[in-house]
Image 1: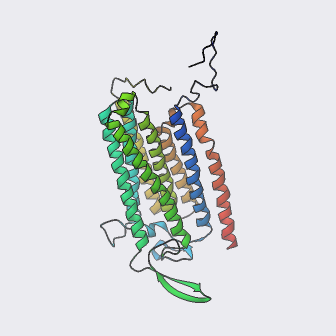
Image 2: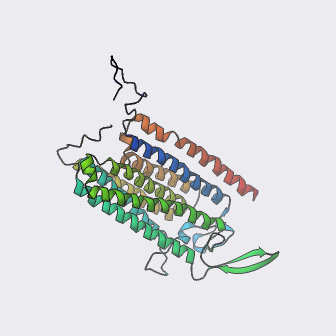
Image 3: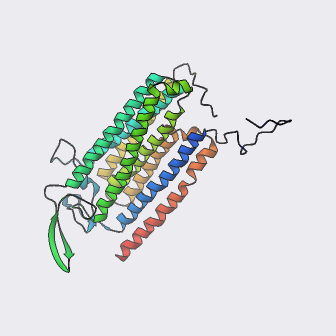
Amino acid sequence: MAATTTGTVEPKMWMGGIEPMKASYGKLMMWFFLISDTFTFSALLVSYGLVRFSYTAYAGEVADFTFSNLYWPIPEKVYEAVPFLHGIELPLVFVGIMTFILIFSSVTMVLAVEAGHRMDKASVEKYMLWTILGGFTFLGCQAWEWAHFIHGTESGTMVREIVNGTWIEKTIFGANLAENQYGPPAFADFFFFITGFHGTHVFSGVLLNILIYYRSATGFYDRRGHYEMVEKVGLYWHFVDLVWVFVFTFFYLV
Amino acid sequence: MADINTHDQSSDGGAAERKQIWKVFIILSLITALEFVIAFTFAHGTLKVAIFVGMTIVKAFYIVGEFMHLKHEAKSLIWSILIPCIFVVWLLLALMLEGGSIFSVR
């Protein structure tokens, strides 16, 4: 790779032609893109923390909790629905299932990468398909969460607010970006923004996984001699899982 | 290019690597299960939040270090990823203080 000269040039670490971090260009660039995405999600999550702690927290007993736009809600009272089990209060069960699905799809992704290291085309295909299935399942679950959150509960929440100078009382059902039955408007705003950003990343990750699956299945990487592309989309997929771990903690547990 | 063309010739067909992968999965599942237990038993407060943050960072180390393989990469790459995250820590601390101040003023 060095230019032809009459003598030999001693290769230097940072002067080109060598990989100083022992990783290919593509892998390095994926890592640096992930750092930038980390900053994006960190900014969103930290501002969530800021706004959340600028509101009063609910101070009473958990059993006496009711929704109000005056204080931030307790997560296990908001997220307690499970599909097909209408009316049964199962706090945080559904989001636990979602977390398990995403972590499991990360495991199948790592197994696909490991199979790629051994040039095991059949296993790469198998594990990529499992990962894609996990991704779509997670997206379906998140769509259900949104639908349920937007639709609200049967009883709704009564709020008092000033409209055109007078106090009025009204009942709010469900949620949108302007008002919601669970707590202050910012509660729903942040829910939609942060889970929406994350869901978009999951969706683009699934699309990439489908493309890489197709490339693997048609023998493209076999002919190339290595499955490094599986590793690179694997990094993106693990990042998506990692973000969910943080979102899950800060939204649903804290 | 980096050793992408030297394929694993391990005699066990990668079984040891797969065992490690499943081991990390078990660890992550256990930590998550423990988080659920803590969510329903501890009283809401700063201690609970601190425990959750700690457990999440442990999970992050396993996902980034093992699943994303960062622990086994070159040192310079590891530090290129970790050092910028100090900015995130700063941002978190600064804005949590801000949130508290806004709360006091409200």
